[in-house]
Amino acid sequence: MERSTPLHRRTVLVQSLLAAGAVSAQASEPLAATALRIENVTRLYPVEVARVVTPRSTDEVKAALASWPGAVAVGGGRFSMGGQVAVRGGLHVDMRQLSGLVWLRPEAGAVRVQAGMRWRDLQDLLDPQGLAVRIMQSYSNFTVGGSVSVNCHGRYVGLGPVGHSIRALQLVTATGDVLEVGPQSRPELFSAAIGGYGAVGVITEVELDLAPNVRIQRRVTPVPLRDYAEHFRRFVLTDPTAVLHNADLLPPDFAEPVCVTWHRVGDDVALTEPERLVPRGRSYALEQNVIFAMTELPGGARLRERVVHPLLMRPQVVKWLNHEASLDVAELEPRTRAVSTYVLQEYFIPESNFLGFAQEMARLLRRRNVEALNVSIRHSPRDRVSALPWAPEDVFSFVLYYKQRTWPRARAEVGAWTRELIALALRHGGRYYLPYQLHATVEQFNAAYPEADRLRRIKQQVDPAGKLSNELWRKYL
Image (cartoon, rainbow, N blue to C red; front, side, top):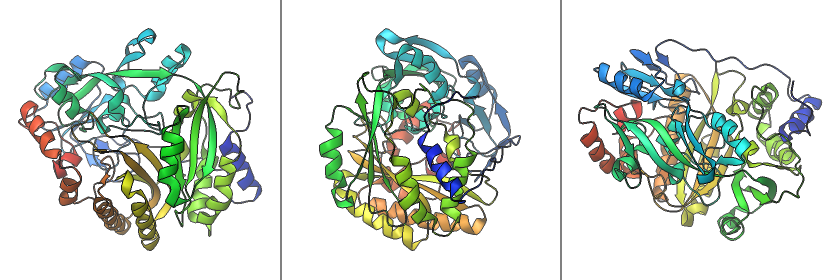
């Protein structure tokens, strides 16, 4: 049993809605595994494969590639949503057992891990040393290698994609070579592996920069949409104490961003959350019912805007950075995925086009009756590393979190309005993120990522037979 702690902000929310009779407690449906059928977190678009292997060493990865005559795809936590971790009729390399620590050097602020380690497991090793991951997603369930393969980002102010924190990679190529790649050693292959979705090799080890674990305090500021970009530049980006930042746009209007910035504070500021990491194995059934209420009950969108979000943002919170970075994606899980599922999309827009895109996006989401829970805004400086950058210049990212039905007609409808959103992003000089459903046309992919020709060239050099593949690259590369 967890020891008694001050009420978590989600607990305050849940208790309030329970008292109002808006939700009831109900356990979520467990996930089921199906042999040779590679599912992703959404349960949409599973991929039938011929064989699955679970290597525990780099040598076993090398042997698997050598012994398999056909196409090979690599997967970790399976949070990508469109077949990025599997290829039809091929070999699926499940990296989750390749999860050990290679070395940790606190004095150098660096760590090297096997690629199947999850961020949460790494945090268990770093926290006693007073250290934290420098750049990662907002949730800790992802594997390190998978995060590198999609070139993830989080809410870290001024840091950008995870590629900016990678010192070196160990890579197994399709021909079985085990290579050490980095900014000074085979830099072109290094850049192609970061955000390359397994196109040029299997990442087996990752060497990362670390950061100090610090106390952070949440500060919440509503800002008019027209003023948000300037507010971020003046009061967040230039503030040396700002560690994490995002702004929430809420349905149905998506017109009043609520800025949430976590600032570094001194040890003299008392913690309101004494836990250093989010406890493992928590039940999130109540949170799941809250999300159900907001998406299914009449007036659910206004409920979130006027009741739920203010309740979440009201309490003052001071906690460790590692606690905020160790959130569990289970809190986003639906009660069931039988008839509906929760999905993400993301769009990267140049700073100068922020307002125009935000306003047109809101109109499109309303016109298309998208069941959006929220749009989270983040910021990234220009990507200096990846051969396939989603941020070729400084950008604001719009992370759309929405609910969709699972039947074929609903999937087709989502595909149609997704292509409209991608077209909108392209008209504003932006790009879309690749780990999600494969709704973009080939023409849209080529327009968003003209650097793909460079990735194709590098891949041809190290994988001339095209052995390393997945459903993403079968369609676009």
